[in-house]
Length: 251
Image 1 (spheres, rainbow, N blue to C red):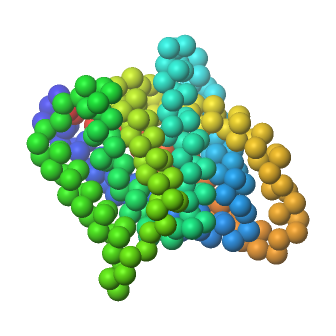
Image 2: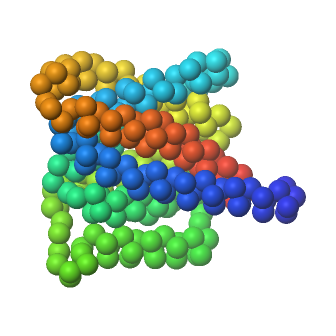
Protein backbone atom coordinates (compact mmCIF):
# COMPACT_ATOMS: atom_id res chain seq x y z
CA UNK A 1 0.00 0.00 0.00
CA UNK A 2 1.65 3.34 -1.03
CA UNK A 3 2.86 5.57 1.81
CA UNK A 4 0.86 8.54 0.45
CA UNK A 5 -2.36 6.50 0.49
CA UNK A 6 -1.71 5.30 4.04
CA UNK A 7 -0.99 8.87 5.22
CA UNK A 8 -4.14 10.19 3.55
CA UNK A 9 -6.27 7.43 5.04
CA UNK A 10 -4.72 7.94 8.48
CA UNK A 11 -5.77 11.61 8.43
CA UNK A 12 -9.21 10.61 7.24
CA UNK A 13 -9.51 7.99 9.97
CA UNK A 14 -8.29 10.45 12.61
CA UNK A 15 -10.96 12.96 11.58
CA UNK A 16 -13.63 10.27 11.67
CA UNK A 17 -12.43 9.23 15.12
CA UNK A 18 -12.83 12.80 16.40
CA UNK A 19 -16.35 13.00 14.97
CA UNK A 20 -17.18 9.61 16.48
CA UNK A 21 -15.88 10.69 19.89
CA UNK A 22 -18.07 13.82 19.80
CA UNK A 23 -21.16 11.86 18.76
CA UNK A 24 -20.69 9.11 21.33
CA UNK A 25 -19.73 11.61 24.00
CA UNK A 26 -23.03 13.42 23.53
CA UNK A 27 -24.95 10.12 23.58
CA UNK A 28 -24.71 9.85 27.36
CA UNK A 29 -26.27 13.28 27.81
CA UNK A 30 -29.01 12.43 25.31
CA UNK A 31 -29.81 9.24 27.21
CA UNK A 32 -30.07 11.16 30.45
CA UNK A 33 -32.44 13.67 28.83
CA UNK A 34 -34.59 10.92 27.34
CA UNK A 35 -34.95 9.30 30.76
CA UNK A 36 -36.99 12.28 32.00
CA UNK A 37 -40.04 10.62 30.43
CA UNK A 38 -39.16 7.09 29.33
CA UNK A 39 -37.91 4.18 31.38
CA UNK A 40 -34.68 2.38 30.41
CA UNK A 41 -36.44 -0.47 28.60
CA UNK A 42 -38.48 1.94 26.50
CA UNK A 43 -35.41 4.03 25.77
CA UNK A 44 -33.23 1.12 24.64
CA UNK A 45 -35.89 -0.66 22.60
CA UNK A 46 -36.95 2.52 20.78
CA UNK A 47 -33.32 3.47 20.16
CA UNK A 48 -32.57 0.11 18.53
CA UNK A 49 -35.80 0.09 16.54
CA UNK A 50 -35.42 3.58 15.08
CA UNK A 51 -31.70 3.11 14.38
CA UNK A 52 -32.49 -0.07 12.46
CA UNK A 53 -35.23 1.61 10.44
CA UNK A 54 -32.88 4.50 9.65
CA UNK A 55 -30.31 2.22 8.03
CA UNK A 56 -32.75 -0.25 6.50
CA UNK A 57 -33.08 1.54 3.10
CA UNK A 58 -29.29 1.47 2.76
CA UNK A 59 -28.93 -2.14 3.89
CA UNK A 60 -31.64 -3.86 1.83
CA UNK A 61 -29.95 -3.38 -1.60
CA UNK A 62 -26.73 -4.88 -0.21
CA UNK A 63 -28.16 -7.93 1.56
CA UNK A 64 -27.48 -10.23 -1.41
CA UNK A 65 -23.76 -9.58 -1.01
CA UNK A 66 -23.71 -11.13 2.47
CA UNK A 67 -22.98 -14.84 2.76
CA UNK A 68 -24.69 -17.15 5.24
CA UNK A 69 -21.40 -17.52 7.09
CA UNK A 70 -21.14 -13.74 7.54
CA UNK A 71 -24.59 -13.50 9.11
CA UNK A 72 -23.55 -15.42 12.20
CA UNK A 73 -20.85 -12.85 12.88
CA UNK A 74 -23.15 -9.94 12.04
CA UNK A 75 -25.56 -11.37 14.62
CA UNK A 76 -22.79 -11.32 17.25
CA UNK A 77 -22.05 -7.69 16.38
CA UNK A 78 -25.77 -6.88 16.50
CA UNK A 79 -26.39 -8.28 19.96
CA UNK A 80 -23.00 -7.76 21.63
CA UNK A 81 -22.18 -4.44 19.97
CA UNK A 82 -25.67 -2.94 19.87
CA UNK A 83 -28.59 -4.79 21.43
CA UNK A 84 -27.51 -5.83 24.92
CA UNK A 85 -25.30 -2.77 25.65
CA UNK A 86 -28.16 -0.42 24.74
CA UNK A 87 -30.23 -1.85 27.61
CA UNK A 88 -27.28 -2.03 30.02
CA UNK A 89 -26.34 1.61 29.46
CA UNK A 90 -29.93 2.82 29.74
CA UNK A 91 -30.47 0.97 33.03
CA UNK A 92 -27.12 2.11 34.41
CA UNK A 93 -27.82 5.77 33.68
CA UNK A 94 -30.80 5.77 36.00
CA UNK A 95 -28.25 5.77 38.84
CA UNK A 96 -25.04 7.04 37.21
CA UNK A 97 -24.42 10.47 35.75
CA UNK A 98 -23.41 11.03 32.14
CA UNK A 99 -19.80 11.93 32.95
CA UNK A 100 -19.25 8.72 34.89
CA UNK A 101 -20.92 6.65 32.16
CA UNK A 102 -18.67 8.24 29.56
CA UNK A 103 -15.58 7.57 31.64
CA UNK A 104 -16.55 3.94 32.16
CA UNK A 105 -17.12 3.60 28.43
CA UNK A 106 -13.42 4.43 28.01
CA UNK A 107 -12.72 0.89 29.23
CA UNK A 108 -13.71 -0.38 25.78
CA UNK A 109 -10.15 -0.23 24.32
CA UNK A 110 -8.85 -2.28 27.25
CA UNK A 111 -11.42 -5.02 26.72
CA UNK A 112 -10.84 -4.89 22.97
CA UNK A 113 -7.15 -5.55 23.63
CA UNK A 114 -7.78 -8.31 26.19
CA UNK A 115 -10.46 -10.10 24.15
CA UNK A 116 -8.25 -9.89 21.07
CA UNK A 117 -5.36 -11.56 22.90
CA UNK A 118 -7.39 -14.18 24.79
CA UNK A 119 -10.02 -15.21 22.24
CA UNK A 120 -8.52 -14.22 18.91
CA UNK A 121 -4.79 -14.80 19.62
CA UNK A 122 -3.94 -11.32 18.39
CA UNK A 123 -0.51 -9.82 18.93
CA UNK A 124 -0.24 -6.16 19.83
CA UNK A 125 2.75 -3.84 19.87
CA UNK A 126 4.16 -2.47 23.13
CA UNK A 127 3.18 1.05 22.05
CA UNK A 128 -0.45 0.02 21.62
CA UNK A 129 -0.47 -1.65 25.04
CA UNK A 130 1.02 1.45 26.64
CA UNK A 131 -1.65 3.57 24.95
CA UNK A 132 -4.42 1.37 26.33
CA UNK A 133 -2.93 1.53 29.84
CA UNK A 134 -2.73 5.33 29.68
CA UNK A 135 -6.34 5.46 28.53
CA UNK A 136 -7.34 3.13 31.36
CA UNK A 137 -5.60 5.26 33.97
CA UNK A 138 -7.33 8.34 32.59
CA UNK A 139 -10.73 6.68 32.72
CA UNK A 140 -10.14 5.47 36.30
CA UNK A 141 -9.27 9.01 37.32
CA UNK A 142 -12.48 10.33 35.78
CA UNK A 143 -14.55 7.53 37.28
CA UNK A 144 -13.43 7.73 40.89
CA UNK A 145 -12.50 11.37 41.39
CA UNK A 146 -14.76 14.30 40.63
CA UNK A 147 -13.46 17.83 40.31
CA UNK A 148 -14.06 18.45 44.03
CA UNK A 149 -12.12 15.34 44.99
CA UNK A 150 -15.06 13.24 46.17
CA UNK A 151 -15.96 9.75 45.02
CA UNK A 152 -19.13 9.11 43.05
CA UNK A 153 -19.72 5.59 41.82
CA UNK A 154 -22.67 3.25 42.24
CA UNK A 155 -20.72 0.05 41.75
CA UNK A 156 -23.72 -2.17 41.02
CA UNK A 157 -24.86 -0.03 38.11
CA UNK A 158 -21.30 0.78 37.07
CA UNK A 159 -20.78 -2.95 36.60
CA UNK A 160 -23.51 -2.95 33.94
CA UNK A 161 -21.46 -0.50 31.88
CA UNK A 162 -18.30 -2.52 32.44
CA UNK A 163 -20.12 -5.57 31.06
CA UNK A 164 -21.32 -3.50 28.10
CA UNK A 165 -17.76 -2.41 27.31
CA UNK A 166 -16.65 -6.05 27.49
CA UNK A 167 -19.33 -6.87 24.91
CA UNK A 168 -18.06 -3.95 22.80
CA UNK A 169 -14.62 -5.53 22.94
CA UNK A 170 -16.00 -8.82 21.62
CA UNK A 171 -17.93 -7.06 18.85
CA UNK A 172 -14.93 -4.99 17.76
CA UNK A 173 -12.71 -8.04 17.47
CA UNK A 174 -15.35 -9.90 15.47
CA UNK A 175 -15.56 -6.98 13.03
CA UNK A 176 -11.78 -6.83 12.68
CA UNK A 177 -11.26 -10.57 12.37
CA UNK A 178 -14.35 -11.83 10.56
CA UNK A 179 -16.15 -8.96 8.83
CA UNK A 180 -13.42 -6.76 7.41
CA UNK A 181 -14.55 -7.69 3.88
CA UNK A 182 -18.20 -6.75 4.51
CA UNK A 183 -19.49 -3.22 3.83
CA UNK A 184 -19.63 -1.19 7.06
CA UNK A 185 -23.24 -0.15 6.38
CA UNK A 186 -24.25 -3.80 6.08
CA UNK A 187 -22.45 -4.72 9.30
CA UNK A 188 -24.04 -1.85 11.22
CA UNK A 189 -27.48 -2.05 9.61
CA UNK A 190 -27.62 -5.84 9.51
CA UNK A 191 -26.61 -6.11 13.14
CA UNK A 192 -29.15 -3.50 14.18
CA UNK A 193 -31.84 -5.21 12.11
CA UNK A 194 -31.30 -8.51 13.93
CA UNK A 195 -31.19 -6.79 17.33
CA UNK A 196 -34.30 -4.76 16.54
CA UNK A 197 -36.57 -7.81 16.13
CA UNK A 198 -36.76 -8.51 19.88
CA UNK A 199 -36.43 -4.77 20.59
CA UNK A 200 -39.58 -3.97 18.62
CA UNK A 201 -41.51 -6.67 20.45
CA UNK A 202 -40.30 -5.28 23.78
CA UNK A 203 -41.17 -1.73 22.70
CA UNK A 204 -44.69 -2.72 21.67
CA UNK A 205 -45.32 -4.21 25.12
CA UNK A 206 -43.49 -1.54 27.14
CA UNK A 207 -46.22 1.09 27.38
CA UNK A 208 -44.26 3.49 25.17
CA UNK A 209 -47.38 4.87 23.48
CA UNK A 210 -49.05 5.47 26.84
CA UNK A 211 -46.11 7.59 27.92
CA UNK A 212 -46.36 9.64 24.71
CA UNK A 213 -50.05 10.28 25.40
CA UNK A 214 -49.84 11.06 29.12
CA UNK A 215 -46.42 12.42 30.04
CA UNK A 216 -46.09 16.19 29.41
CA UNK A 217 -42.31 15.80 28.96
CA UNK A 218 -42.64 13.00 26.41
CA UNK A 219 -42.26 15.17 23.29
CA UNK A 220 -39.06 16.73 24.57
CA UNK A 221 -37.69 13.34 25.61
CA UNK A 222 -38.66 11.84 22.25
CA UNK A 223 -36.64 14.52 20.45
CA UNK A 224 -33.54 13.61 22.45
CA UNK A 225 -34.19 9.90 22.03
CA UNK A 226 -34.66 10.16 18.27
CA UNK A 227 -31.41 12.12 17.96
CA UNK A 228 -29.69 9.43 20.02
CA UNK A 229 -31.03 6.67 17.78
CA UNK A 230 -30.17 8.31 14.44
CA UNK A 231 -26.81 9.87 15.33
CA UNK A 232 -25.62 7.97 18.40
CA UNK A 233 -26.52 4.56 17.01
CA UNK A 234 -27.12 4.43 13.25
CA UNK A 235 -24.59 7.02 12.05
CA UNK A 236 -21.99 6.29 14.75
CA UNK A 237 -22.08 2.53 14.19
CA UNK A 238 -21.47 2.86 10.45
CA UNK A 239 -18.52 5.13 11.19
CA UNK A 240 -17.15 2.86 13.91
CA UNK A 241 -17.48 -0.29 11.83
CA UNK A 242 -15.72 1.40 8.92
CA UNK A 243 -12.85 2.42 11.19
CA UNK A 244 -12.65 -1.04 12.77
CA UNK A 245 -12.42 -2.69 9.36
CA UNK A 246 -10.01 -0.20 7.83
CA UNK A 247 -7.55 -0.10 10.71
CA UNK A 248 -7.07 -3.82 10.26
CA UNK A 249 -5.89 -3.18 6.69
CA UNK A 250 -3.21 -0.80 7.92
CA UNK A 251 -1.82 -3.09 10.62
